[in-house]
Image 1 (cartoon, helix red, strand yellow):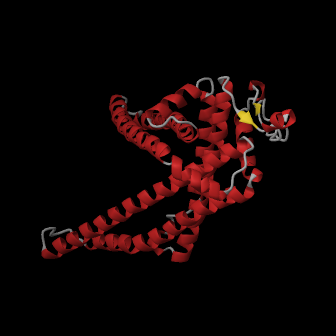
Image 2 (tube, rainbow, N blue to C red; image 1 turned 135 degrees about the vertical axis):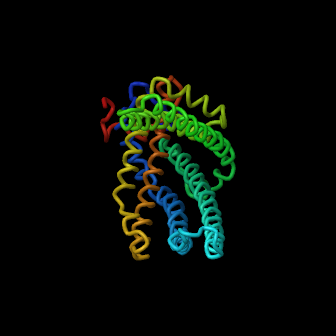
Image 3 (cartoon, helix red, strand yellow; image 1 turned 45 degrees about the horizontal axis):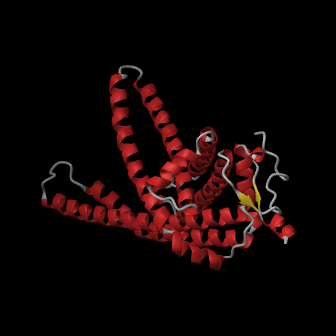
Amino acid sequence: MEKQMNQAMIMAEPSSSLGVLGILGVAFKIPSRNWKLMVSIMVLFLLPVCLLTIVSDLALRPIEVDITSGIALLPKDDPSSPESREIMERLQKDFGLLLCWKLVTLVLFCVFMLFSLLATVYSTARIYTGKQLNLKELLSMIGGIWKKPLITWFYISLFSIVFVIVSVILGMILISVLMVRVHHVALISVLILGYLCYLYLATVWMLSLVVSIEEDNYGLMALSRAGELIKGKTIQGFAIMLILSLVSVVIYISFPSKRGGMNQRTETRLAIGITMVSLLCLVKLFIFMAYTVFYFECKKSHGEKVEVEETVDYYAPIDFNKV
């Protein structure tokens, strides 16, 4: 009986704290601990996103072509002519359809993203602590915990909007003050500073989403809890977000998704779009895994108990503890 209890769970020691590369290494190894479950999550996330990409492209392309041709046909000499009014009415209708479809696409993508967040974080936490979990159990658990991260996500969205508005206002003020010959340098500096600030906030926000899934805290309480947990690990969390964000940027700029313009073949455009979206989604899933591991590292750094099965060894195969 005592042997079973000793094998059941142990408390992770603070001395086994991981560095940035260590956390990324552990996160990279997570899928190998339960391939069947993690591949199922990837398929359930990537398949609807890719289908949404295809449907969106096929539905929006005719509207975009119509808008482009309509703008080109607008008479420049007599904007008030019947022909101009007819074209403007058609453009307004097209822009309305475009906006509605974009909103529908955004809502669906957010639903898929929330599911992937719940599934990935919950599965990663179970795998990290050595617990067994299958897809049926995972889907059952998601049905009972989805409201908490949704509320936290709502607050994060509000704060993101406020951050963007404040950043734009402050940026305009700084640029107007620093104008003359250095306005380009000032603009670049403001953009870089704003981006770095956003990455820091994104680190706390991502951690708060993990907290919402793993603990009873949600909403503002989850954000407050994340702020407490990240103390002493701020640079580490920021570095993880910076590295993975740069990976996403590299993937995005590596695909010539817009170079072909309207003349690009449909098959080529869809192939490029699906490949790019799939890679970006995989990076997003990895971010969820990395910050779940980071969550446990933060708990250990504060002396909180992290129960891990004794047979689960994340540290021996990849020795990144000193990084």
